[in-house]
Amino acid sequence: MIVAWIGMLVNTGCLYLFKGLWHIPIIPASVMAIEVAIIHNFIGFRLWAWKDRLHRPSFLKHMVVFNVATGAVDVIGNVSVLWVLATFAGVHYLIANLLGMIVPPFIKFWLNDKLIFREQKYGHSQ
Image (cartoon, rainbow, N blue to C red; front, side, top):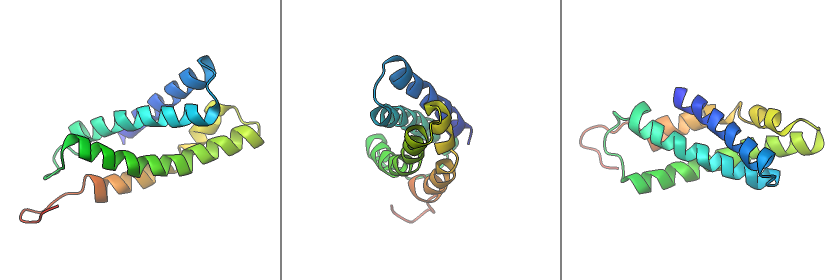
């Protein structure tokens, strides 16, 4: 979870950069911030958190699978909550972003542990 927590900081920092400093509209700014955090998290998970898992696909193929799975969770969970709270409830976009990041990490941890970085038994192919 340390990698994911740092990824949340990466996401928030990038969102501030894209929306707060560069004035990119909130939805594309959020999606871009999520993508930077996804790349950060994938590298951290592959090189550190789940480095002991066997029979992983190639780096690029693995990153695409990770990106699609976790990106879908983030877009549905994080971006939706961020947009609704910031647009309709008047919540500051950085606070709305943090609130949108509460549930998705638990879903993504399960996806990563059970599917994307699943442990392979010897003799089984992927």
